[in-house]
Image (cartoon, rainbow, N blue to C red):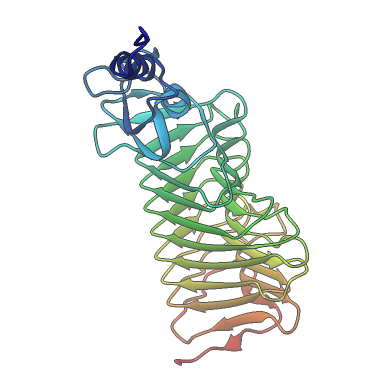
Length: 328
């Protein structure tokens, strides 16, 4: 006798199960809106979700995209997979946090995270970081704002692996820590980063690129960027135990940094085993020196002849003199 549970019936039942289960119906694209509702089946443009976290957890597949439909506050989010979160010019897409971080990234070693057009706010230093990158393969931040955090606007703190970072066309301001900081805490891997067309202002420090443990290298390029009117330094770079670390600085401005009562400040502070090459940049009107160079050999600060270092309260350069880095 033919069983009553036929193949067509089984297929139909399975289709209904998938349709009713958001975890099984993961999509390559999900939408959120200030008028949306976090519920099973949300995520289409006509029925958007309300929060980024719900869309991340229940709708968007790994490698997918969450798109923002209209101006609203979308809450903090913890990212655990490859994802893009995109505001493509609809207005302010706010991510406010009163504790912790606005965005926490605990993704897998090969995962890529892409953030565009987001306004992160720590509610007058109540929250810690705008973006905290702990694990993942790469991070791209474009056209974002991170303000009012007690820690950093963007903090790259990988625990392991080789990490690639791009931060572009972004503002970090009014933070209690650094506007942007990279400080790997793992015992292996590298952080390779590009910071371009970034403004970092009125933070404790502008941009900080700090060395990790032995075996970890920071390699960064900073270009067409401004780190000015920060309480301490405009740019600080150091490599605590690894001479492979290097930073190239081009066409950037590190001016008017430091308060008169802060002694560890400068337009650029370079220390320990780091190699820094600067070209076409200004280090003017800082409260102590334009550049403080206490690097250890074989590192050093190397300058082309088109940099401008003037009007600093204590002079142009403190510590070691700058090396000459002419056209190659």
